Length: 340
Image 1 (cartoon, helix red, strand yellow):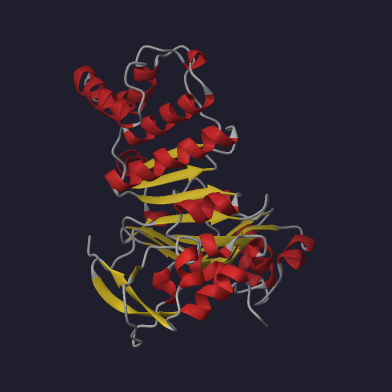
Image 2 (spheres, one colour):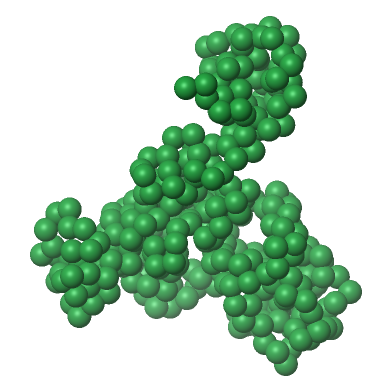
């Protein structure tokens, strides 16, 4: 696959629920609102969404219940057939695939983890993890070896012979993650996988997930309703409302420049200093004197330096090379609040 072709490309996609969704969409006036569509007896689960997801990217989709985030992800894997628009995976239109081709795509390319762990209670950890390989027809020895590999990867080595009832909630979730990884998917869909966990276990699972992504570099679509979780995990965040994407951008840009009032309300209670990085504040053509700050440092990380420093412009580096300079006042405004 060419590097410039998105892994998933979604263009003007609609998913309408109702008695005759295709006919309704064909005759629908342009610009019809979600409420107007509902008043006509239909629900726009996905409303004219266009988004590209690139190799190795972690896109987090978030929104309130009923916003359309789970429906959109089910359209990406064609668990739902879209009503209009197009969705392609690695350049191939998934709506053109036969049932057999679609099943093969899911089995060979896609891993899925959901909030409900869906473990088989009468099978051990190892047997649960090996189950998708069994469904694929892989021989017993090969699937055992692969299952042992991913059980170790998710930190469950030594618990291979445990049954789900003998595991904690966090451990059960790890089994679910291991099972989805067993097929070595290129694309990984996770639908609120940590929302049923206690806060401490949830934090541990986020740490584990970030570790796995560093090792595996999967293309990931992760659904959550927790903005803090989204900020922690995402390369980009897509915020949905009434089936539509209100804004899709990096965490830094979403908290600095919310595109709509709805997005602004999502971000208003966020500590921006813990989200915004020096690299985002750096002006490429600007220069500064003295020790540079790393582009990955947050304003919170730089707090003591910012308060005690006297430089107007502070150089910023990435991978050892200076990429520009950051206005100290801009960073202080984020840390302390604007004087205006």
